[in-house]
Image 1 (tube, rainbow, N blue to C red):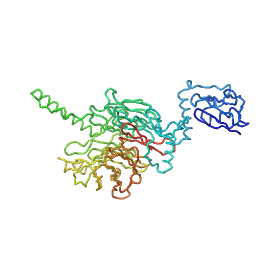
Image 2: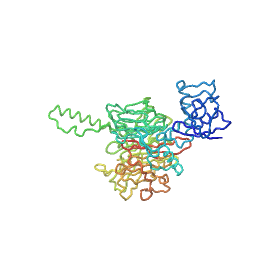
Image 3: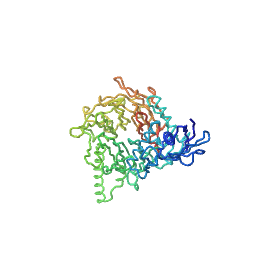
Image 4: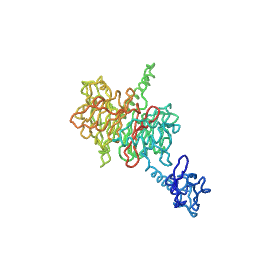
Length: 578
């Protein structure tokens, strides 16, 4: 048996030919090496047989002199049979039904994926056609919008993560999506179940990313009057986005499935799926602040005085309306199918309405929706299957007893921890604020009676970090604080649960760091609250991506794999990290 070189495109293989080799077995050997079906092959031999190899060609090869070359494409044609004969009917791509083509492409994709490392579609190319063998050694520009590490280097990092144990993040930047010198900031980032990444920008544009390229660009509102995309969230197989006073649902090809208007004068601030098919919860806030100079000039006559009084009354009605909207959470059912419900605070407040809602989280295991507010209140609503309504649940109130009641605690973000590792635990990002005026002596949240809420005391550290934000882990089933995480030198707007049981926290601009807290640091086995800071228990400090506006987890979609990466909104671009 002798070996002969085979060249196809830029790749080179080796085939074995002996006295028992027939044209058909040679073609089948080539198909196993390259993936090009027998019926798509045009196999020629320099210093060998003449012309294209056929089923009845006599193999003439000379060891050391004959070189084989292949012309053909994996997807160019699909044969009706697996053997080449004079009676074989070749079906060209133009004659293939969409179903046949999809089934064939899936078969080729699954076969190629078996021999590849990982399947994170946002940062990895399709394994078909050996596309991941890019032949590069350093970072390079994939296209105008994408720069990243070579595909083989990305696969090596995935192997490193998998073999290191625990699937710990490496803090290495592998790909940048977008233009660094672009005119718009990336405000939010989310991922479809298919692995396609969606990024929203402050110029109202939405972009979809897959396999290291931009596959679609859409507009949230009217392109002539751009307004920032304010939020996004996964809802089943689709993504919901908010901005320009509109909520839209998108598929992973960039088609708008449905849309609805926000209440007049408001913008969606936060969206979260509530676990029921096609339904989600939304917080709305005032889109444009009132002009503080509207009534600066005094009226000069009776007519102007009357117009001013009417304008002042209208302003008061608008303030009351926006205040009421900001306190509630709206449940939207199947976008356009009706049945929208708004849930408002049920407790009694001193000095006016409840504080504005700031964030949402949904605990699927017990079907409870949590709403955090600007004065440390954490309110819950439970879904009732009997009538489909939502019943009022608990009200937890975070307080800081160490400040002699001079400081309050505001909730800025909520995140459900991975329930396989931390059942019933909610991560709450908090920020301190100074109480003054009428409410200086009242408890945070201005409750009329403490019996309406369960007060949870947040223990602050005595060092400099006490004036900055912290993340409080609350067991919402037992209504108790488990752990308080401190270690950033600014507020913590980004809190992200990781599939391995860890927690990612991203500090503000003055901190500009991303930390990962191991799952063991997030569990309290004692009756007292554990205070975790950088001196007591070290969190993993990621070298990349640094200061981020938003982040989401990119799961490895290959069956049996538990790896993951990150997609992070950083200034003008989306950075993908491992």
